[in-house]
Length: 72
Image 1 (tube, rainbow, N blue to C red):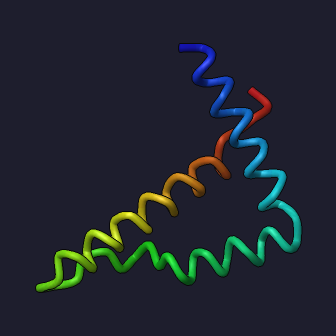
Image 2 (cartoon, helix red, strand yellow; image 1 turned 60 degrees about the vertical axis):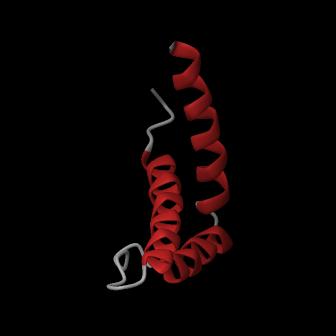
Image 3 (cartoon, helix red, strand yellow; image 1 turned 90 degrees about the horizontal axis):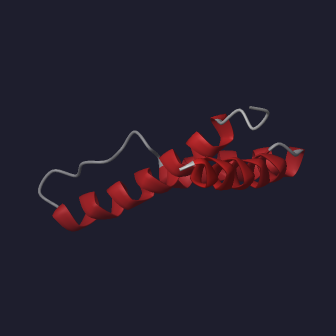
């Protein structure tokens, strides 16, 4: 189990090194605009809802990696 935590910290450190740069911050803001994590469910359109759920999963994944304290 410890190796899983190490891999997550290593991956998190990679994401953080990319998204902490000025250009990385701009890219993250652009991605958030396209992902729009607040719009998930589309009434009457299950396909669009599933697409939005996939986008939301990507947003959550990256956002969580950016929040991990890699110094632990």
